[in-house]
Image 1 (cartoon, rainbow, N blue to C red):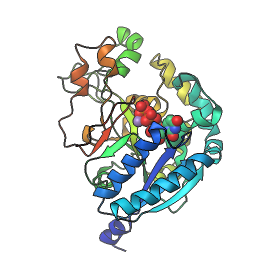
Image 2 (cartoon, helix red, strand yellow):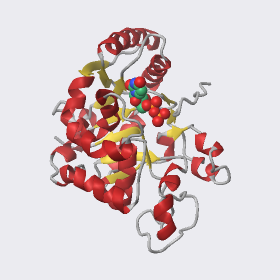
Image 3 (tube, helix red, strand yellow):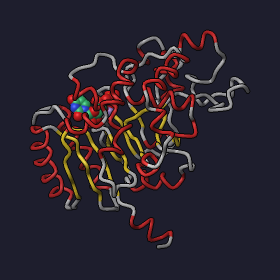
Length: 312
Ligand code: UDP
Ligand code: MN
C-alpha cells in the first residue's frame, strides 16, 4: 500500500451520543438538523456510530431513514448501548467526576460526558480514528475537511480540539492566576504576556469538546495515555491549578493543554464555532468578544448552551 491508498481507505467514522430523548425533545430536532447538514454537504460515505438507550434508538432509526430519503444519500450506521459504554469507562469517570462534574446525575448519563476519553475501548478495533460530535452542531461545509485535519497532527497528538470561545477558564483559573503570571485563561488574540509561558505564549482559552478528533490507534498503543487518565494524575493537575470545573471531558482537555500540550492538536475555531454568549452577561462583558471572535472560515456551528443556530 502507498500513501494514496491509505488516504482513500480512511473510513469516515463519526460518533454521536443520543440519549434520554422523546420524539418532541429539542435534542431530537438538533439531531435531525445535524444529520441532514452532514449528509447534505458530505463528499464521502459516512459511518455513524451512535450511543443510545432503547427509546432513543428507535427515534434515531426513524429519523435516519427520513433523512436519507430527504437528502437522497446513503450512510452506514451502528448503535451502541449507553450502559455498555458507561461500564467500559468506569475508571475514567471515577477519576474525573469529583473535579469536572457539577451535579452528577444518574451514573450512566453523567459518565457519558467523559466518553471521548475512553471511546478507544468501545470502538471496533478496525477503527483507527474517529470524530466525536455533539448533537447541537450544524455543518456549513463538508465534514471531509474536518477529517483532513488528521493529516496535520503532530506525532505525539492523541486528540484534535478547537478552542473554547468564552472566558470560562479565566474564571476557573482565578485563584491560580492571582499567584502565577501565565497566559493560561487569557484570550489568544493579544500580545504575549509573558516570555515564561513557552506553551501557548499568545494566550490559551482552553478547549471545547463539542468536536473531538481522536486517534484510537495511538491511544491503544500508548503506555503513557493510561497513566494520564488515572485518579492520581487528575488529582495532581487539579491541585496544581486549583481547578474545579463543571464541563466534563473538556475541563480535562484544557488541563492537558496546560501540562501536556504535545498530546493535543489545536484546530482552528472554524471547526467548532460556538455560539453561547452566557459569559458575556455574567461578569465578562468587557472582554467577552476577544474570546468569542473567530476569523476562520466556518465549517461547523455549535449551538451550545441551547443557543439557536441560524440556518440560512
Ligand atoms: N446529550 C444527550 N442527551 C441529553 C443531553 C446531552 O445525548 O439529555 C448529548 C448530546 O450528544 C449533546 C451532548 O451530550 O450534544 C453534550 O450536551 P450539549 O451539547 O447540550 O452541551 P453544551 O454543548 O451546551 O455544553
Ligand atoms: Mn454542545
